[in-house]
Length: 133
Image (cartoon, rainbow, N blue to C red; front, side, top):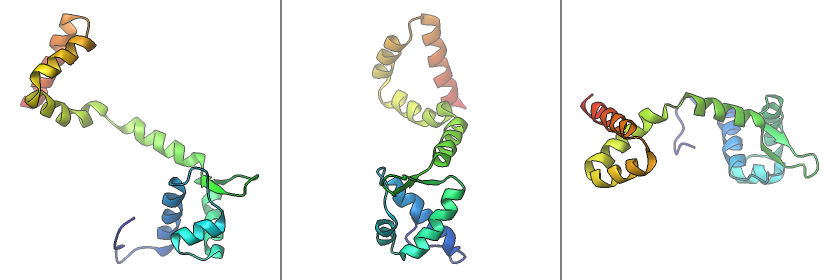
C-alpha cells in the first residue's frame, strides 16, 4: 500500500485493498479477527467488506476452518494480465544490456539454445535491429 494515500482516496476501497493484500501474504487464510488485527480494523467492518469481496469472487471462505483467502477471481485477473504481457518487449532492454556487456556469454547461450545456424543468425539479427531501433 501507499505510505500516504491520495487526498481523494475512497476509504472503503482502501480497506478492501488492504484485505486483499493482507490475504495475499497468508495463503493458509486468516480469520476475521486476525485479519482485523492485521489491518487495524474492527472485525464487524472486516466482515462486511469480506462479504462484498466474496460476492464478487475476490475472496473465499474455507468452510472447515472459517478462514478467508484470496478467491479464484484473483487468479483469473492474474492470468488476464499475464496474457497481455509481451515478454519479448519486456525482456529486450535486459537482453540488449546483456549483449553489450557479455557478448561472448550470449553467443554461448545461443549456441546451446538454438540448434540451427540460420535460427541463431536470425536471433542475433533481431537483437541488433532492436538495438538500432
